[in-house]
Image (tube, rainbow, N blue to C red):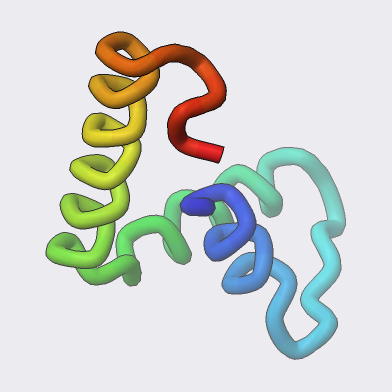
Length: 62
């Protein structure tokens, strides 16, 4: 997921936040490093799964 990828980037090299402001800055910085095409593909994949669940039922994408 996007959140798992972001978490990995934020805490790479054993980085630790000194406070909430530092954590927020780091999250924003690392989020900007994401490849936009990859993010668009991930969002489109979620959309396809949601459409399939709507059309074929909740467990159709499992």
